[in-house]
Image (tube, rainbow, N blue to C red; front, side):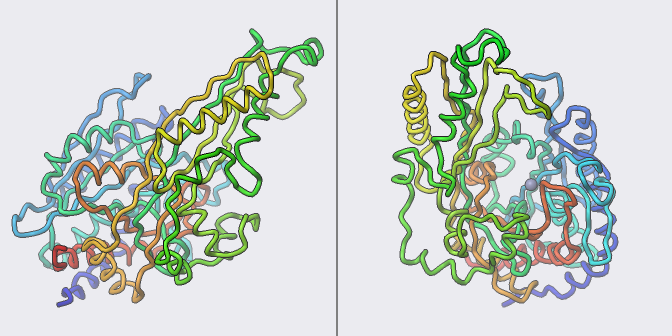
Length: 475
Ligand SMILES: [Zn+2]
């Protein structure tokens, strides 16, 4: 029987201004995790969440994580909370983050980034509105709307909100592994709301993410930076070597030149072949979010496959290189090139690293340079794929159809949320990614927004999902 949700939905609508006000309060706290000067604000945001949760009747605590490695800064606390502990109900563990990306009005924002601005067309503009304060508050709002409607909360809710997501989730992995069989012990499934619809029209449920192996190539030779008028043409230049080596990794059409990479990629099955055509995704929306028409492929299927299930190699930058305006005639003494590979099933981290090292070493050797070269991985996070046939996904699909009136797309994503895999492994339970915002929200860029419709209907969706979870047969 479909759950009775009308009373809940009505309360969400009634309380919508109050919920927007709550988002305004949260956006006003500039919890930028990557800026040391803002660390007190990040901590303040954690306290704010704890206090809000406590007011709503949840048991909430702050878990201190000690100092940020290599600094004197305290890491922001992880907010752990529980709402309900009825043995006859299912328990859902949700994760989100309360820190945000940096933002300054001078970056090109139309409005003050830390003042929530409600636009006439319904856009709620502000840093963190969609990533990830809106979704995090969505869970709190769902609790409050149930209380206001006098409707029994359908599950026990465990919450884990961190404050370092935009800066590598320092300390979270250890905590999740440690609490997997303790604080999170009775979790029946996990739900993370920290990603986006593929487009702007149709909601989606996400069951896969690519991994990311990040590498450095360090080339040095001269004892100090040199003047090209004095040493140009008579010394091996690290930058010349590095540009050659980095240039050999990947073709302009995206083809990765490292042997053995594509051999590890899972073959496309007949089932999968048919999956892409029905997905609500157009090249037009892609061009809009890309900000240009410079896509490698012209068609949707190849593009989606490139994002979801094929590896990619991107060159990110060169540390130590001259990058200011002007015409400085320096020969940098040491340069470090950075690149990463987005990984997919069935690539293995170690094997991929070995292939990369071998290729880079051979490419450098071919240069016959007297400089020295080191290649190493800075960090590696594995890809993740869950079963979308699980009751956790079934419940989310039914809730989506109820709230939005359409069946959701089942999607994968090209990016990485490394903690997804950690939650899956630490709890041994199915993990679902249930996004609230849409593809044009601009999570990490200027003018970040969450559409009011996505926020309010998203609160309904999170609550409805919990009701359907309570009714799904275990499979
Ligand atoms: Zn996020």
